Length: 321
Image (cartoon, rainbow, N blue to C red):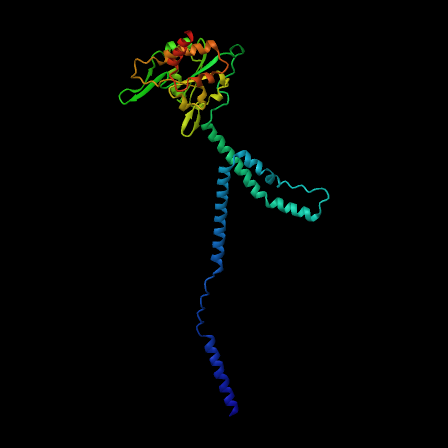
């Protein structure tokens, strides 16, 4: 009886184990989403954004506060620190620290050099548009002409006036007295036209305006200095003694960087048929050329705010009396 009981007991336990092993496996519970992975990604992302923002701000401040030469000088020692050379008698630890520091600063130093090269290229491009194309706009005077004064004359509203109409297009008008003015003063002056117009406009106009070639040189927009949205005549780049340069223009004080050399004349428009301003200036300019003052700037200063031709006649009469 005991044997039967044990046998039945064995089969009962074995069947239960068989049923358990053939039962459907339990569905595994999904593991909770990882929390550390997104946090690490966000940390890396914000670190990169912060580094780029800081670099941009630092670059902008350096560009605003310092010029190229100052930045080059201030970062010179830092950039040269990448070229590590161990000193005589340096220990192994010193050599290791020096090599480690040199390796660590290589990338920042290269970034500084890249910034300097990029800024130098950009400034050169900007300078080509804002500065005169050369520091010597005129060739050297001949030795026998060192005493000659240079008369710089503007073009529009000084020697000519041009307009545009729908039915006629562009029209250019010659100021009254321009022929007598150029022909007479060419005997005493080196006459230079200095304008902010383009070459394609200046050359054909001068060819028709001055068939006798009284105008020795012509300078157009590439020879001007672009500043504050305007093209200025920079007389310091003429390669002439500033004490012997006069700039005659209807907008002399507004368009020149050297107002002390400016000779204002009444701006002219083509509707003023009775204008005599150019002819009126001939006596004063001839007197200056003949008397040859050592420095024309104090002379012009004495006429500041006055109509120069009228004041010159008044002073001449006073002197004769």
